[in-house]
Image 1: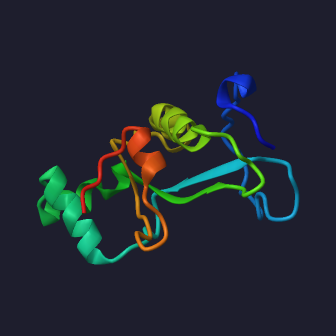
Image 2: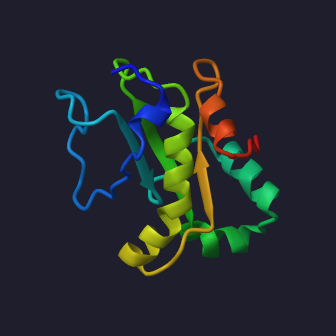
Length: 136
């Protein structure tokens, strides 16, 4: 698929109600996947420490509030999808609704979203374009 983003509007962003089994690995059922998680966060502790310093959390505050942070563990736009600005558009839309969806499912909001980039492979351009802030 190759098209300018305005021609694809309006795009739907649907919350997955069940586990996502190999979401896009064998079919062309979707063009992008964003998976959010608050458990088993990835990354080294130094990255968490950078986040905690940026927020201003003490060790005790971190322990009490870590459940209010969601980690973007996976963001994928399949190679056959060539839509300029699609990545930042989707990241922005999902970020705008995530806290309300989390509240509905888990009974509490999300106050911070985070993701970790493999900087040797990715520049993080779509995250910056969606308004994310680099903290480490």
